[in-house]
Image: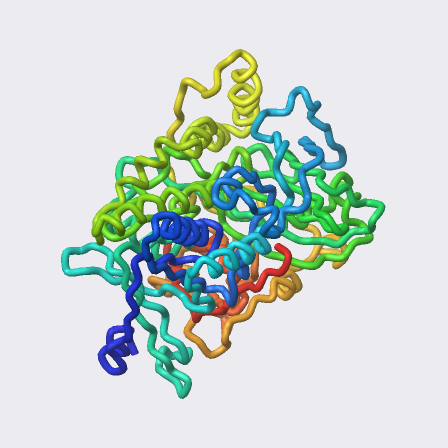
Length: 560
């Protein structure tokens, strides 16, 4: 049964009205809601705000390194320490290691580019910070609906955004309503703010509908794969931040590792790989597992226990690729737009600031009696903010690496070590990129196969055991949320031409090619999906369409 058929038979849907609806309960969305309520209290005005979060609770789907710059959270909640924000471990030291297969060279402190300077930052669990932000929002009167997906955009007759509809519950695999069926509900707002994270499902639809990316560079992404470990006390160095470049990747692929020491004998470590890689034989998951076996990384986790696993796509954050963030009836904030500083490997402070700027523009509009128009004050505020200045300073970082990895390393040193020392705050040149990540993949026959070692179950692991500790779950009988435009493409094109890259770029073992009765076919294990969005980005034929599953499904990250 089609969505239209369901609506005609079981509708109409109930509707709730708000001044502002926020889609996504991450740092950007919650900061938008908090700032709106702060301004309402300051000006003695009533502004109704709700937040939709598809995870089982705020923070359930949040994944980040994470080293947090406290600049934005201090602006949003200056008394965050008194309020008990989980920012406990200051950064105590930075190390940048250049890895060969067996050795490592540490970059001297005096040669460290400014983008790797984390003085004044904190090593955190962003999931815990997000949960805390949700508590602050609710204390201010924000309504948070966890376990509800924003599945559909709603429009006024004039084309402006009216709000969103939540997904239906209780559909079977065949799309037919079952015994527990509940039709979704509509949330209408004067302005709807989208804070879904990188490659947001509805955000992509809005960018296309309103041509928000017209004249801008192509949005590009990376995949970040992360683990949380408990390590022996004698190996712990609370506050140490380690970044690595080089092995196991070759010079044709952008990426690097991170290892951050938390309090409580825990380390968070992971690997980031640009999704513009060319070799279809490459597996980001296997590269991360192989990286952990390097003596300089293994030394920190040997004898420890792996507690958590996750993966998430992230924006490369070039301001040249930012779409317009406003359209009639709403706005994009955080990574839904692309507010991330890839050079600093930080996005949470940018997400929070973008949400605050959007909230200030929305509050001004609502209290002036406006609705469903463009929040032009948001774009003006961003261009006048320190966030714009910061992103513009680092605008070339990723694009140098796209031209050539060696050139990228050299120009990072020039732009963020040499120029500041001669009094030039920002590089006087701007690079551009018009090529999307999926188009960079080359035919398998043109690229060297990669042989990965078998996991040892101690330092390195397989996908399924990794997904297990991500606490990922989807109701088994619901419709698959990973759909194909053309079912013949995976075998006819992707397998034949690119050796089935779906089976390698997915970090959760969702896509599997099998031979049944002499016929190759793609099996989609949607219940394994950790909502990273890599398939939506990297599929060379752009045949995979990610849609929202039932609310509450997906990973339930703890401590990540």
